[in-house]
Length: 288
DNA sequence: CACTTGACCTGTCCGC
DNA sequence: TGCGGACAGGTCAAGT
Image (cartoon, rainbow, N blue to C red; front, side):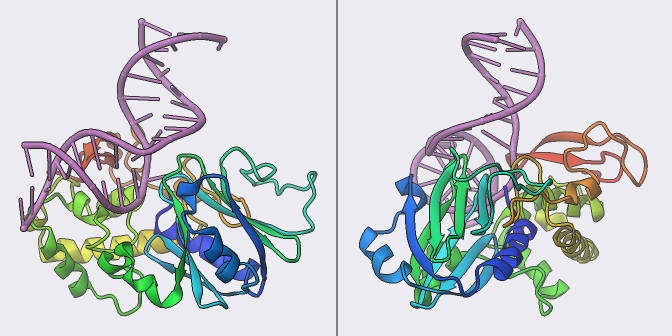
């Protein structure tokens, strides 16, 4: 579910909500969701204060005073929701998607010593939370192979185009979704940026011209920055750290808009399968 | 090797 | 308001 803009939105929320709070306890209802030994949790999580909340690709990093980090991947259906100590049953925000927590999808609960809680909910159990020594975070498999951050100021068009040389024979959409090429792109922003650059998703990487890479680079950054501004995309169950939906899909041009007119030319948007994923294009603007 | 497909899970929606 | 099947935003292991 969450791609770079959604994870970044959660990060910004947590940055305001949990810095300085002290962990009082942690429990997991599903061992796969939080595979750490109880002794590590007692030693390095309980009593720790939150120093920093970072993001790398689609991964959240909650850095603790014990020199350990909670590494969190939300995969398809993960949520990370903070509920303060003063919230009672009656007072849900009107735009909230979550009811009382914990609920059936709650896999991990972090309790803070002031009575507030951080809930990791994950309907499909693909996501995970891991407690890792902070210096070892760059060495976990995912971190070792993930590509550069596309929104960093020093990430250039040239760098962007060069990354695709790793996957010359595959489709541009498969390459965009490959986290080792560029970090943080998922199905929504792949489709939206390809529409913006007028590139057909099934086009082979080796056929893409330098001008098209330049276009795609601009579109990808524009689309992701707009989404962060709108609080991300809520298609089914994404929510931010306060349980609220994002509104980017109101501004999307093709994603989940099959049958509706292309905003540029009016041709109906179509949906088909590409790189194993549901894919949305304007068949007039994006020719194979 | 480069690339594609299936598996991991649960829930929802659609057609019969 | 039953049942089977397809599908869902991600990533890895296994297969071609």
